[in-house]
Amino acid sequence: MLFLANRAPSESNLENKIRIFRDGNDALIMFEDATLACIDKSLVNKLLNMNVKLYALSADLEARGIKDEKCEEVQLIDYGIAIELIMERYEKNISI
Image (cartoon, rainbow, N blue to C red; front, side, top):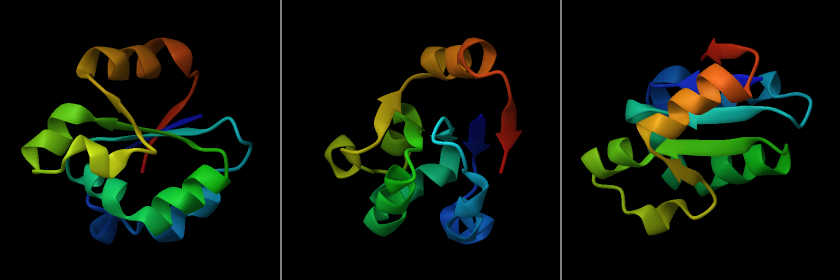
C-alpha cells in the first residue's frame, strides 16, 4: 500500500500513525511540508525498521531549503516518478 503525506509531521501526527504500516510492502511519499519528516532521523529510522519504503519529492525539499544530503535514507523523486508510483506501482493509495 502507498501512503501519501503532505502535512508537516507536527501537524499530521505522523509519529503516532506509524502503526498503520503493517506488512513490509508499504511505502510513503512525502509531499509539500511532509518532506520535513526527512530530517527527523528518529522517525525515518522507525519507518525504515518497519521496512517502509520512503520517498520524498526533491522539488518540495528544495523549496523548504532542505539539502538532499540530509535525507540520505529517503529516495528522492520527481513528479513523474510520484505519478508512476501512485498510478502504476501500488494498487491502493491512502492520504494520511
